[in-house]
Amino acid sequence: MITLSNASEALKTIYLGVIAEQLNNKINPFLSVIEKTSNDVFGKEIKKLVTYGVNGGISSGTETGSLPKAAGNNYLTFTSDLKNFFGKIEISDKALRASLDDSGAFVNLLNAEMEGLLSASKRNFGRMLFGDGTGVIATVAEFTDNTDYSKFKVDDASKLEAGMIIDVEVNGSITSNTKARQIVAVDKTNNIVTISAAASGAYATGSKIYVQNSKNNELTGLEAIFGDSTTLYGLTRANYDFLKPYHNTTGGTMSASLIQDAIDSVEELSGGVVNFIATSYAVRKKYVEHCAQNNRNVDVMNLDCGFKALSYSGIPFVVDRFCGKQDMYLLNTDDFKLHQLCDWRWIEDAAGGILRQETNTAGYNATLVKYADLMCERPAGQAKISNITIS
Image 1 (cartoon, rainbow, N blue to C red):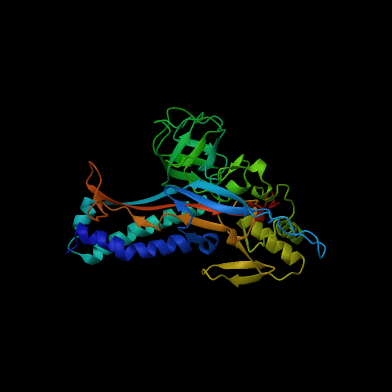
Image 2 (cartoon, rainbow, N blue to C red):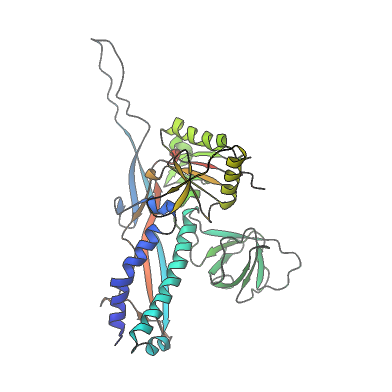
């Protein structure tokens, strides 16, 4: 007979390993090749000691002249808070009782919940990898003559999905009228979002959309490196050249020289080596068209993580749905680490139980958690090309 105790044990011993494997290695090729480590985690923070510049204690002199003056490495400490990532499943008491005497039915029930949790978690974590940590996933756009306040328009609906629960920041504030609104439909052609409960009025143009409770709480993704914030990992960018990556904001027509210029600049200015390229479907299409027009072969490679990729001079060239439509990232994955307090875990009560009754409801829930953040130890060893022509 199925009980809450052995159901919790199944979540811990059977499902957890599969979930952790999927969320660590099957979200996208970029995350799968990044090292996951508990090093440099101190309490609730990541503090990573990095070197910059060169050791100054070198010279060429005469046979009897003075030896070089000693000058050691230059050190700085990168600091970041561990971010809190949660995933939650819920099973009604009715569904649980209906399957208590049928292990097969209960397994099907858990499998369905796990598949839903995995799908949503993969999508959310994959999106954050290309974000800047602020959590903004869309901005409200002008919606002329709209009087149905259950609908609003955004600049880009590609990161929004039906079922998501969102917060809307209007004029700098998230209030009870704009918090925890569930999306019921997304028209991605016209960028129109429908929510389950109408607002009291139209959301102001420029209002920011976040996943529930996520404002300024998300992973420090790639855009944090290439964005225009004044600080990165607790340091002022203007004070250190090595915090400034190569960023071609002009872009233009796809060509081999456009890509090669970025790669060469990284190698020349930082000594880094680009070993990974990520871009959008639209940019990949333009790259394939460019190869065809110039009689170049489009090589395909199998990555160790199980994904397939195109090859640019032996460098994996992958596509990701959350990469900006006109963007391309050229990265050295060896410079990135996902620092974590622990791997994915279920939150347990004092007795080791995972499934717990939801307060004042006839249902049970279990919460998956991970405390981690992404850090790049050499920002100047990365590159980005924006505004690549895709029309």
